[in-house]
Structure formats: C-alpha cells, structure tokens
Length: 82
Image (cartoon, rainbow, N blue to C red; front, side):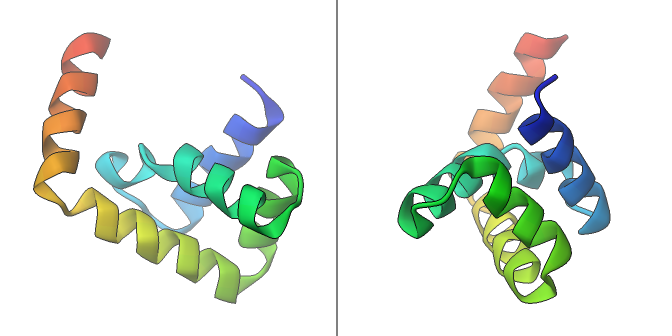
C-alpha cells in the first residue's frame, strides 16, 4: 500500500467516514492536489493536520457518499471485492 493510501485510511478513520464515503477520498484528494498545484501526499497530510481542510474534504466525501449514484457504485465495488 502506498503512503498516500495509508494516509487516506488514517484520514477516513480520524473523520469516522463510512466505507461508501471513504471510497471517494482518492478522487477528492487528487482533485484538491490538482487545484492547489501541490503533491497528493502533501494535500492528504494537510487535511490530517488542519481541521478546516480536513472537515472540508470529509464533508465533500459525506455529501458524495450520500448520493444515489454513490450507492450504485458502492454496490458494484462491494460485489467485486467479495
């Protein structure tokens, strides 16, 4: 597992994200890194250490995870992992 993936697991646990919400962290962090023009790992570490950034990313993950489309994708993902 890469350092970025391990840090995303830490982030998901710290913000008590449900699996359906955590599933979207990679995309959210990648987009944030692109917009901030910073390396992915830096953005993840910032979100872990800075509550304002962390709450923002966690809020987005919760919002996306609550959509009907997310439920469909999560069922596909969970089914393929079985």
